[in-house]
Image: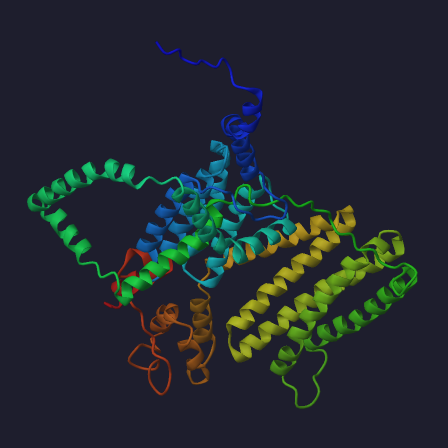
Length: 512
């Protein structure tokens, strides 16, 4: 009987020669853990690759692409923009790591809802701007975890707009390469063969029993993949996916930036010092006083204008230069505020000068109103009135800042709120109607600038028809003038409250 050789244990030399077995078995988990850790650590510098695409983010991306296809493909824009903004903000909040509380979600969605209201009223560049503000605000909060500062927001937008669209194809290619090495074709075939065969049989039976399923199947089978329309649609999906991806995966992609307020130091020993500021304020007060009394004399009728100059020319000549003068006055007041705060005399001169600047803004507005009475109202003149009001508010805020020793940041926030509130209110004002209504009620028919009015668009139709002067059959559209045309709302995606009101007006009062 042959004896069996048994070796108890592994020789030391052989054990050392087979070190790779030990490393593969025991060291692989450690290496994998290090790799996983490396994939989750964000490098400094902002936007970066996350390593593996989240299934939740992919699902949200698919939903947003399908929604964009239904809302925007070959349809006019309208309320669809507002709905898509709300949906995108909701997806961004849902994908935030760690989730959001009910209070946070409620405040964020309330902020977005307020921002999209101008689009519900009417789709225009200004209302689209507020939609962008809504998404940027939510993106900044998700990406940084706090209220983003100006520097953070600027850096974030540069990365999202210029780097973000390239992240999806790069991350998708990385995931495909990683999954291809582990893909087992035979196992996949065994896992999918049975459901595909039985499912196909069920689909054929359902199509024979249900005409709706049959119609849907016919549409799918008649899908012309290589047609120009379908190629354009696929390109629309791809571009939309690339643009959306950084918004859905924003958290963790951005490094927090330390925001340090920039202090503007004035050279006290140079041109700007206490003596030069005192001399400047005295000179400015004298010059503004001459301008103030001159305006009072002309506007009250106590002084006559030079020969050949009408009141309309006087008004037009002074409105915009005075507006620029007020802007320069405000900027100069902000720059020299640290010096003015050190002297009671300088503060008194500053208050006197700012008071005269306020009066200057009022006289500029009065001049502009006189010019409008003579030469009608336009969009540019409406904008001038609005900016005069904002400058007036800004100068009042400068006076309050000096009186209460407020910081410059307080002044900037106050002016920012005033500008934002004014622009937001402008979204709900039908300026085309107001301009047309004013011009037709304050101007003789032979002096109306019909070409300008006809170019204002469909919203002028009620004002023209109410005055009985202009309809589609009389002025606009004839003699080289553009025709007024209103296309009724046919798809719900293009619905807008202002357009709907116009359509109701035409249907009710003019049988159109």
